[in-house]
Image (tube, rainbow, N blue to C red):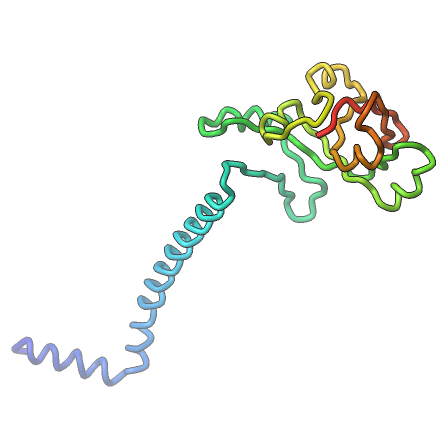
Length: 187
């Protein structure tokens, strides 16, 4: 081979002699580069969608839920999760809530069968719930550290339940699984 022209001629002859092999060799890098471009594009698009969704919410509320691994039962957070979240510099406040299942809520014993068939959702919350969720009390007070420390049987009910049970005026109790809880507030 005496010249560049001879070298190019040999290269072209090799590429055209085995065209399927040449095509497959070229296809590998094309697919690889395309996959990287697609992955970066999807990541950036998802990030943009998330930012748009958070901006559309109009506030800075983020909800976290414990996730179970495959086959595990009842996922829960560790007890110090609220404290750990509050240590983050960008977090203004956090609260812990939990939906409790299997609780029958009745204003009086005669209504037990109705509220067994149509259960009222029961949530537990800590003393910071009102402040973090920016919820106003309609009447009464919220749960406090004394209630928590003494394991007092106190409850705050929603306004719909309060109207249905007639809890708007005076001191009332509500039965949760046959245990009386004092209604101290309405939200």
